Amino acid sequence: MSSQKRTVANLSINEDRPTDLSFDHLYTWVIWQFPRKRGKWLCGAIRPPIAKHGWLPALIKPGENIVQVHGYADRNFDTPDEALEWLISTKVG
Image 1 (cartoon, rainbow, N blue to C red):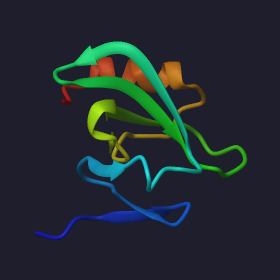
Image 2: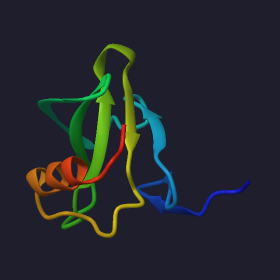
Image 3: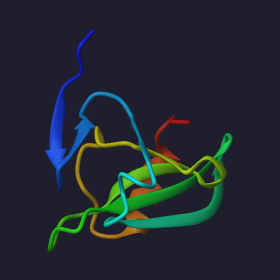
Image 4: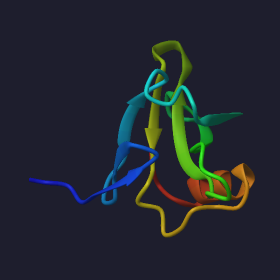
C-alpha cells in the first residue's frame, strides 16, 4: 500500500497517516512539547523553517527522539495550542 505524501522543507510527510521522524530529521524545525500525555507519547506540534508556515500536530517520544507528525490534519494551525486542541479532539496515539 502506497501512501499519499507531500514535501515540507525537504521532508516527505504522509497525508493519510502519521509520519515518524527522528529529532535529527527535524533539527531546523521548531518542536513544541506539551506536558500532556497521549498514551506513551507527549502531545506537541512542529513547525518547519518556512516563514508563515503553520504548525503541524505531533506526538513526541523524547526518550527515543521520535516525532510522529500528523500531517493528515485538515489544515496547518496558527499556534501550537490549536494543534494541541486538534490532537485532543482526534483519536490518535
